Length: 347
Image 1 (spheres, rainbow, N blue to C red):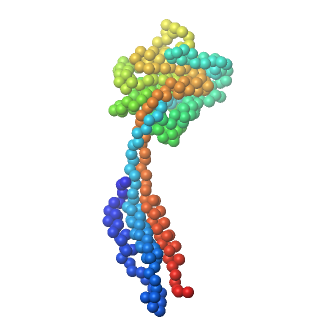
Image 2 (tube, rainbow, N blue to C red; image 1 turned 90 degrees about the horizontal axis):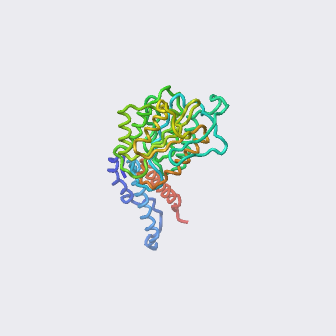
């Protein structure tokens, strides 16, 4: 326990005042010697003095501002350390490329693709990819209480909106904050990934570490950025999950077409996908053309990442002054009740 105003504890000796006071209000009696000793009354008198002492002591302690400082508690659960990297570019305000075919499902044992056909509904009439992604990510985080979540939103530059925490209220608020304002037209996934990997700097390895990249576009990384990302990902033993939200007229990651065409390397999405495959880490790609497909991709991540994890849960500072004031009030009310029950005259 700590105190905001510890110097007020110097007033604690005043709590002895009830033992120094003399009883008053004596009743007239013809001959006190005729009275029998009243042990019960004497015991009650001393008990009331103790109550007065405790009430004064509790009042002084309450005024001193006691509190329990912030501290960490080690917990063990099932989950992972997850950094959400959410694209906030302007294209995320548009709708998905299309809706799923009936019966379409995840394919493959490595990177998975979700088959779909193009919707005839104009993109402006469909929910935006960003809105759907935030909603589903919020539901994903809510059902994983043992995970530690961090979050980055990015377009031209990455913005760290949440440091690692298990507090669901903070996580939901950070995800909802990604809806503020309109995104820019450019994206820099390289800087966003480097910022996401920095979350694990100087952190003890206590369980699975993953980066969930939610984006509808790719990026051609220069050699320096590629080398840094690959080095940090291997050093921190981070798995990357790319939830690729396919836009209309985009060739995508070509996960479901077998071999890629000759000009595939000119597609930023495919180039980034091939880079992730080449750096020697655990990597999973999911291509989604609508909200249902994205839901299946997130559920797949949920099934894969449920290994034991040890983490420190930070408990906030707790103000304890109310307990002191409450104890003082209870003591005063008890003394007041005793005073009201006191005999004022002999019958």
